[in-house]
Length: 180
Image (cartoon, rainbow, N blue to C red; front, side, top):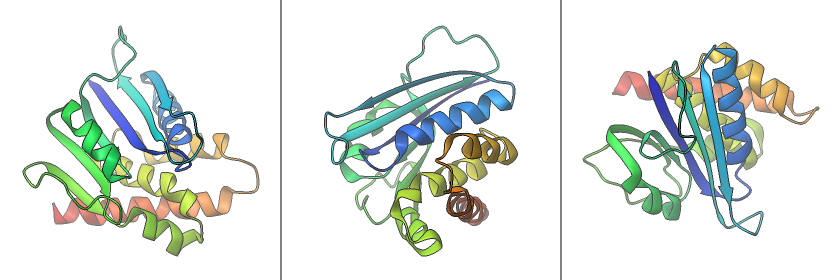
């Protein structure tokens, strides 16, 4: 089993940290992992991309070629990266920012940013909400490993709000999965 995951949006949305946490969770689950990241010159506003490959086998090429899972938090990121998807890929988008998407694909348009704000008062926790959704929808990493990896990587003093965001993501993912 090899799964390629791409997290895209703009700088400041926590996608690089999200990719690192996802990669660490997969390692905790006993998988082989490769993580690469790309971000624009500015910290905020430029395209940000975090790619994670998770495999039971040796990973010979560390970059995502065609993603099995795509998280797109902005319209520009969605438009740029949907051409690099495998047939049947799962796409998760923030419904507030991504308004145009291909209805013929498996797209979960969810209130990611709105949920982050509602649950924690901070939009920056959208990365944790999104990771919770991805974990619940795909099972790419276990919930327990994701929690442990998150707690090991986030700044001290932010544990409570990030756990709240992650749990909200698990719940949102569960409901989305039930709807199909």
